[in-house]
Length: 321
Ligand code: GLY
Image (cartoon, rainbow, N blue to C red):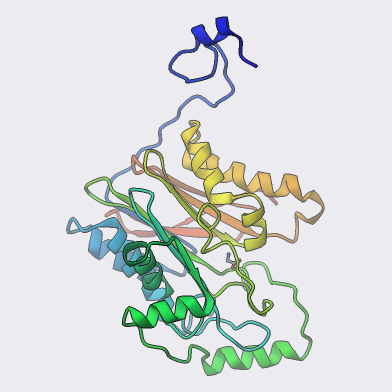
């Protein structure tokens, strides 16, 4: 308990007595804006589409929606949207969420037969009184908003599922079956920050399984006063540590985006040290000053940055050698 004398000595740090140094000293990393960053080296078309919105003074929220839709529509991306690997029953089920510069959010989970879950998530934010709608309810809501239903299981994904059925062993392959989410963060020329996160989730998951991607604070989080973070990888581990919220909170406490991401990956390994070789999670973060960074548990994770100086892949540092 803080006593009256200590309380009177409390200064700008709120309830902390002066002299306490429990937080890192502020290190503001800055960068040019507008800027967009996104998980994984494979999503350059998505960041380029987002950049086209940002470069002419467009809104960060529009940029991240337009950007991730590129991957949702791409049948060759077997971890997001159309063409995503199905669950163990052969059903493609999608999770997505979106947040804006006010910290407003919308999310859908266990959504089937709708190609662009990110746009449904935006409708949840803008057209419903809720933050999250799932399953059949999410599908009905999407249809009520004018979205069309379609089969999202491509012949390639169906073939892969039938191959998997031969063993039916659930052991997600790091950087392949957990090379999953596209998470995208953007800061526009007016300083508005937004994020989007969308995935078909872990391949061969149990029916009804929902990962971190649509969970605000896990797959994505924005604090309007600080910045944004999103996650990729084994969603169960991200959920258990409220990963993206943790990254943003670390930035609030003065850590650079890269340091904040590193701390969140360490938190996962601290929790389950015996399984440290078997888990891949990667984070990216963007602060309100245009500074960005990323970090992962295992090697192989990278992200794309587009801030008008190219559409470049940045390999992330990682914990495990
Ligand atoms: N990170 C996506 C998932 O686990 O579903």
